[in-house]
Length: 460
Image (cartoon, rainbow, N blue to C red; front, side, top):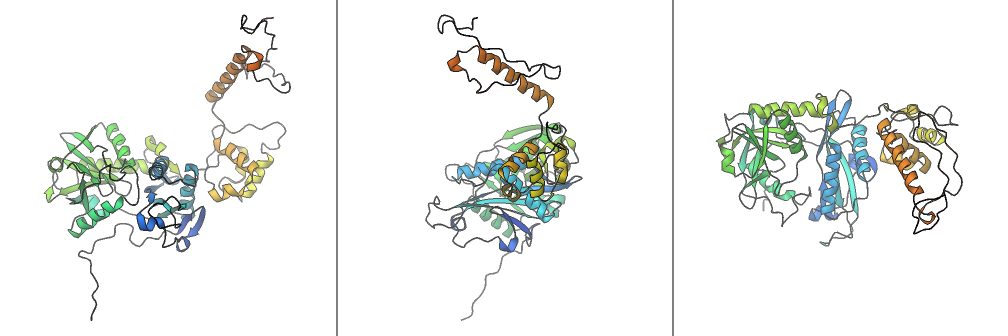
């Protein structure tokens, strides 16, 4: 009896990431080759979708690769883990450092970043609580998500028969792996029908989002953005809203039906993978002129200038991978130290092998690109020295504020009885008054209290 193999209905393009080459992967605290980043086939997340992830992009800039809105993505990753009751065994700072380390280890100029947290293989019962939580960060080069034709001519969308799951069925604010089965089904149907992307409605018939994008449409000169109902809170969506407002556009969040989109002047989608992608057609109906709209293209150009560091106004959104920079406030040389560097700091320089920054750390340079493995390898004293260098010295205004707060605490303490005061175990040296430190005064001698109730203030 002859056997037949099922053939795909449509040979669809895999997008800009066909044949993923991730190179080196951060896998549970270690950088390993892609072939060694392996999990068991009995992993709980593989069977039940108990995972959370993020999609992040790094862009090439004049100062090297920069990750776009890294902290916001990491925060959303941890929020998703909290919703899924997954205790992450790493801190947000460790995940941030792992992302920077992975991009640096692969030498990417620009890339797509995928941090993933999942339940491992301890049991295959539905309850995932006994399963350990694991983490990894992978990076690879990824071009236009829907292809260059979708950018130049506009993407073609079709309304999916699958609806976005309501909030009381699945947690839509969590970027969980299991949630994306809904998107996978809608995307397969759209591609099989010859479209670029699917448009999903919610259970009430209002427009929700694409399979991985937020929806904008322009009507009567006002830019409308679909409200967050069952949608994931988009970071790219928030960025485009800020850019549009600074362009002078009026932005309004609305609930819209798909027939409102048919008569829109322009439509475009936003997302980490899709960036800003114009839409030229929905359900066989041309949008506007049937091509990519000028407002969408202008927003895309401004967005690309922001993510590549060409617009300094949005540089706050960028985290540079190789960001060892001279501190504007180098640490002063301590009394008794030679060359301004402590022994712990010297050990730290040797422990990391003269990495980013090298011996210049002793001169007040900030170290922001050490790996998690290197950080764990140093001793406790060296780690404390690293934290002091990374924090840098506060600016003058903050320093004066701290001195004033300490001054108020000292004087308020003198108005309390002895039993409420924390007296020093040994006499402190009397600091001299100077113009440089106007708030430093010699502490007054404590006076005896005549009566703890009738005389609440200090008396001679």
